[in-house]
Image 1 (tube, rainbow, N blue to C red):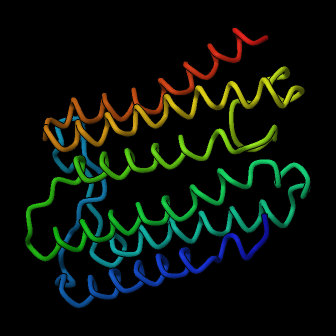
Image 2: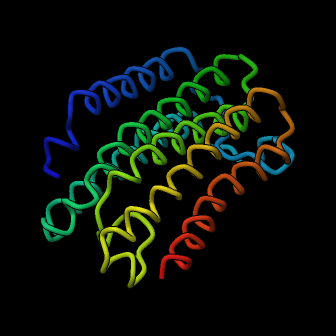
Length: 213
């Protein structure tokens, strides 16, 4: 994995889109507006920031993710990083796109539209799980991404079988989360669904790895 993988055409387009959405926010959202940045278990916003800080939050997180990825490429041993390149390269654009979704929702709220952010974020995380599940079986033993146990790291076949199962579980959970976000606006159900969708693939992967040990 190289810097070209981080700053791929897809990544640059998404970053540009995030910049455009943020700039639109500064134009359409009044300067004195307090915007929600956190939602409680009931789905109601429980934390607010002034317009400028709220609008800059998604680009700030996106910049942090890009800097972290760049630091990983710069300082991590190339051979170890190469083994997990498929997952890292697949996840980065989707994660950045999630920030675009959050930024868009924030701008729409500031402009006076009713937006169910918990539902929106749940759908975005469902897509993230689908992409992750598709990429997991393509990785090789590495110390940065995946189910890193002594016997999965030492045996490429065990790693592959473990991550094939974990990847399938991740895709099923991602699809289930998308369906859940489509059929209900109940914030409690959505938050429980998000937690379960991320925990279950790990448990399934660990059980598969233990069985292969």
